[in-house]
Image (cartoon, rainbow, N blue to C red; front, top):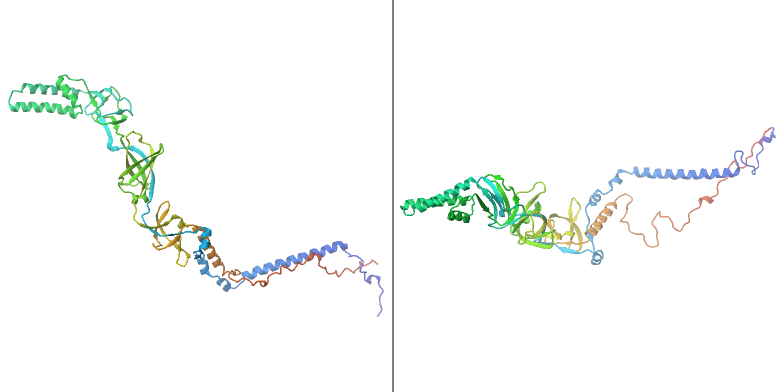
Length: 457
């Protein structure tokens, strides 16, 4: 076999460079390739791990305790020692039975006493000759002159009165029947004027003087304040037309609106304490005298009337006021208002058992006061409930329920006992083992590092 001595087939020395790139750039390329390979390998491991979790058998999913998930919605019992209860401010209160002593407070308005309003009207047609009360708000007493009225009917009645008087004088010595007839005619003429509200003193004066008056004076039948004046001087008025409206303000009404839920506690005769923004520090005391039989469908309230004495006319109709009274209630079961925890869908209290365990109990609520609330069902008189720090107890109970429901989930072994001292859990990384520095790892030699660039013939 003939050997060929071809210089192009001679191996290149190891010290010569790569035929494609310089030696420095060649080392950087190898490191970048290795780092990329590590990243790809790590990503593949993550994908495999996720795929493994998704493909777990249905039995693993069935191992999740649905009863525990359901129990997470209900509170679990909580056990506290006396020291722990004092530390977080937990106090207890017994369930009591008795009247709540609920105080009802509402707004009101001062109004006229309708039984003390008087409308002064004319009983005959005529013309107002003179007004003695010329403006509203003017005070008047019983017997004070109000106005003078000219009326042809009043003039005719005066003439009849004088004629009846003369007739009685003429038949004074006649038969008894004639005397009795003359007396009846005189009494009828006098009675007609009185029925038209001509004062009796004026009738006697007309009869004694024998003179007919053009205008007669009408006087006030009540004491009070003019709240309405409907006529002017010289105006013609008809029979039945209102001339004045007079209100007696020595007693006023206080009318307030009571909500529908408070009506069962309202009774006639209950004492009421009223306060007025216009009279700070001057409260008044009265009694409920009337409860209106109708309810306002828009505000769901009913009116309640209170009578108040007003000797100095300090209370003026239209004033705003507030009044409160103790509503009459029957003995009921109640707990402190702070003991009830309302979630919007349910009302819960924490019941203290004889062994000291605190258990959540659903209750039905009734009426409430500022301090206590009625319990319709769920508790008995012998029970004891948490009266303060209820939110802390609820948080502890909810946390225990949540952790109890998560304990059966895959990968959530919260019930495992702690590891003994001096040992470490399996598969746990060793904290004392230093991490490897991959930047100083020895890289493999390039298999083409000893090749030389082939020479040209």
